[in-house]
Length: 189
Length: 129
Image 1 (cartoon, chains in turn purple, orange):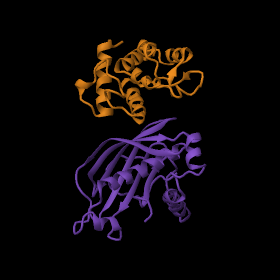
Image 2: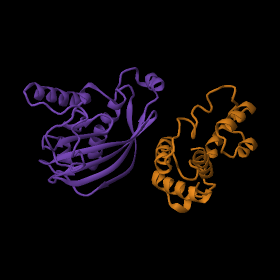
Image 3: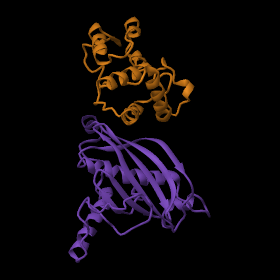
Image 4: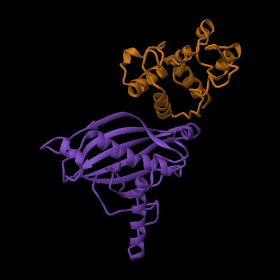
């Protein structure tokens, strides 16, 4: 199993906002254990998907120079469950960013309804200490995880080349309000 | 300029949100780590919330200094040297250093971070902004 809990970015506004989707399928082992006969997405993995969406948003804002780690979840509320066959939409807004870390407001939607609402604090690892322990490799932003963003960028370029140009970066946010509805991909930096 | 009491109430609410403690626990003398159970990562969360709630800018290391025990001249046999205590005084101007002067054990440094220290820090930031 790959530790990637988002499938695709629908929207990515550098330093501001990201929207990603997660499709739930019975091919995922964990749904058979959680729970047998009643496959619902564990809340912890919804948090992980929100954190991956937010972590990439935070990391990209700093050019992926920092190792961004999930530090704390001060608040998380769940209002329902998502089952196999459902599609979750994750919306994350960067509210604070400083040299030590960042805070995001994160929401998960199912069929346009709010399913989860959380606040997530990220810390930037001290690079000198992290390098001593883990080496210079950025173990947070692995190529596999960043591949999700790379794919969205590639798709945006392909659409542009196909004669359906996307709005320029930063200009497509109109209506970027949280609503959970999957839309046509917009701004992917 | 808000009064000490007004700032205290807002700091109290900030700590209730950041640390999940009850309002009654957040007294002026309460220590962040010992009494309120704050861990190192909570300090970052507290900084974010204070900035947001008071509209102030807190430069890195100004409220919660880093590497307070980094210099070998500041520590000897698990205790702060005179130089180390002086360093604390200059980097934590709003902390009650008298306690650590009585018992300069390194593990007492955490007790310097109190609710009162936060209130005084915010008060000074608001007065200069």
